[in-house]
Length: 276
Image (tube, rainbow, N blue to C red; front, side):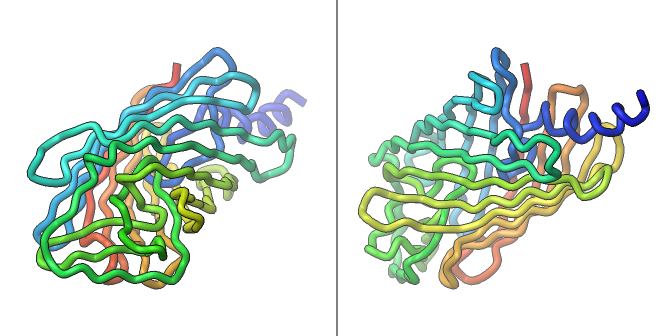
């Protein structure tokens, strides 16, 4: 009987202390009431001769079972002005009580208050593409699209900007529907449906999928894919390495490559999550 109870508890415990465990994919874990999670993410991306760097620290606090509230702050170096504050992103996440059902479901939403003066552009001819669809990223991401399509904006002659779900530089509401499950004892699959509403009437949609394979108690590897539901949008494939030196800390490292002409060439990502 004790052995059976232990086997039933293992999946629940594995989910209970997680949250912010992936690079760009949001899992269903939230802090317990009275506990909180502190995290920070760093990204360096390159498109042609243009480099972009961003740092996003934040926290989530558990309010009720399955419900957490928090915020993150985005700092970026996206042009000649150097590092600057670009946005604050208050957000909440609600994980539905699913009992013994093998899939956890959650809903996360937030609103990005952007410092529009930090929006950047680069010289060169501007080519805009729009299919009327796109989506978001884990935190604020991308300057004003400059068109009514919400599509990707590609600036030639060393220019690169973002629309769709990778939007930043303007206020916008964003949300994610999350499905989170274990495939066996050591493999985890998380799927996000992402939406972004910049307030001008349109809603951009996208997706993020992450799969994570545990190699040992301390180490895991994974693959993540994030992109717009738009053939002219940005898409990126990211290989991840995850290290858990202690039970309440996860260190994340990733290398990404863009898929398609509208995407960044490649990126380097890192992050750390502490659970208290």
